[in-house]
Amino acid sequence: MQKKTTLLQCPSVYCDDRVDPTSTLHALFKRREQLIAKDGSKAKGLSFLELEICEMIKTTKRQQDIIFYGRRQGWPTEIKWQDIVPRILAMQSDLTSMIANDDLMTKSLVWKTLNSKLTQAGSSIKAFSKSRIGQLQTPQRPG
Image (cartoon, rainbow, N blue to C red; front, side, top):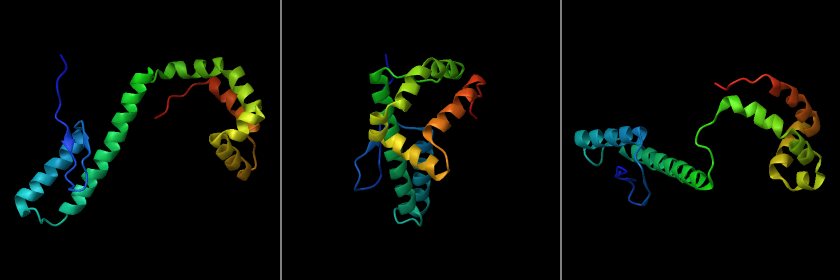
């Protein structure tokens, strides 16, 4: 049986957002309670703290929505870093075909942006891609 969690509601009178609690949000709400207990509802800095809580709730809600959507789509919830390089290398022919597909390239905002940035740097997507394929042979875990 799943434990039912109480959703946290934004303290702003203009916001009805609710999210599953996080340790960061609990800490912010605790700070808010302490501030109100010490100086009342007109406490100095309370408005800024409530704005911070509101923004954190919005961010947390977006993250929780994305995670929920990803799970429904069957997306992985953990990254198996040791599998990244072999998976990318296995897609090399597909990736090369995509790069060579001018119609696809002209319609893709990601590719347009990448191409623009590479052109500004004096390079091209094909040159960039070819230079990176060799680097995939020696995996390095981020962080």
